Structure formats: C-alpha cells, structure tokens
Amino acid sequence: MFSDEYVPQCVPGAQGLRRPLLAWVSACALLLVLVGLVVAAPLALAHGHGLLGQAIYQAFSRVCHQIPERSFMIAGHPFAVCARCAGLYAGLAAGVLLFPLVRSLRSTETPARIWLFIAAAPTALDFSLGFLGVWPNTHFSRAATGALLGAVAAFFIVPGLVDLSRMTRRRFAGRDNAREEPERKLTAAASGQQSAQSDYSWPSSRI
Image (tube, rainbow, N blue to C red; front, side, top):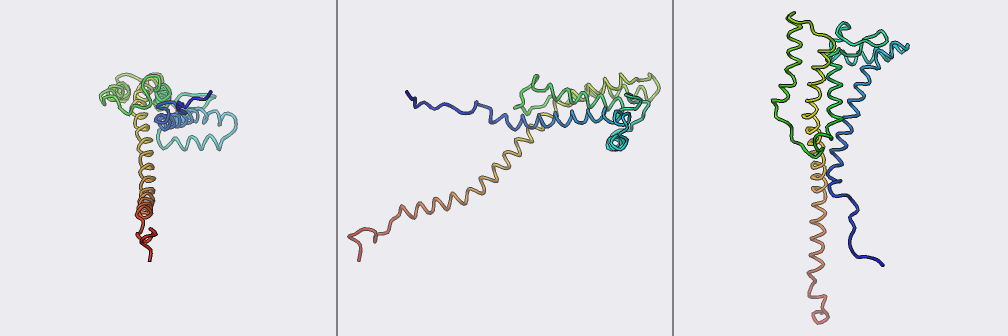
C-alpha cells in the first residue's frame, strides 16, 4: 500500500527563485509607491491635506526642479515632479513590472551598455533642442522620452538587484558555515576520542 519512493516536497528551482522574486517584488512595490506619491501630492492639496501635500513636494524637490510650467496638472495643482521625471518613474515602473515577461528573474546578465545610451539619446535631444530654442518641447515629448529611458534602465537595474540578493544569501551562508565549522571540529575530535579506546578498557589488560 505504501511506496518507498521519495516524493520531492519542493519544486526544482523554486529555492533559487525565492530571493530574486523577493527583490523584484520589493522593487515593484517601491516604484509603485513613488509613482503614487507623484500623483498624490496635488490630490492632497486639492482635498485640503496641505501638510501631507507639502511634505511630498518637499521630498521630491531634492531630485526635481518642479517647475509648474513643465509639469502635468491635476485638480489645479502640478505633479510632485516635472513631466520628464514623471515619465521616467512611470517607464521604470512599467519596465520592472514587465521584466519577468521578457527575461528570467534568475538571470543576472544585463544588455550591452550601448542600449542604455541609445535610450538616453531621445531625452538628451529633446532637452537640447528645447534649451537651444530650436524646437519647443512639450509635456508629451518630455514624458515620452523619459519613459523610454526608464523602461530600458529597468533591464539594468533588475539584474543588479537579483545579483545583490544572491550575494547577500551567499554572505549569510558563509557566516553560518564559519560558525558551524568549530562545532564540527569539536564533534569530530570527540568522536575520535571515543573511538580510540584505552587498553585499560579490556578485561585482560586491567590491573
């Protein structure tokens, strides 16, 4: 009735995917929170939550100029960041979310760096033409070029996070092995002493 055949309790490869999956989920959660805060700032002001809205604006002021004329508006207030930064955050979030559909989370290989420079070229061109007055860029052009750069950057960031999670696992595993090594030596030494019995343990050798 009963079989002696061993049935695996874990799906093969599941153990190796746990930490990369955790790193990916954490990155998705963080980016979704950032995108949500970008939109939450003007909504907070519009609904009378001035302290909350100002706190969000103040936090994002360290990474963005927040010029209202260059920002999307909602409820009569600008986003917490400019249109280009908003596109960058949204593109990065989309790229990280869709990453498992394109590449395996187990992979730590990144694309060639040339692709990152190619993705940054439209943003640099859009900024340069607007700065020089050759062509007036718009909210859409700023957001679209920023989103392209953010989406491509995701394929460099996610493998780095996966590799970091594996390095952390190996580091903790090395510490555990270092702690267990003295115990194994003591156990082996004790076993050796017990196996090497004294001659006085034999009845014929007793005095």
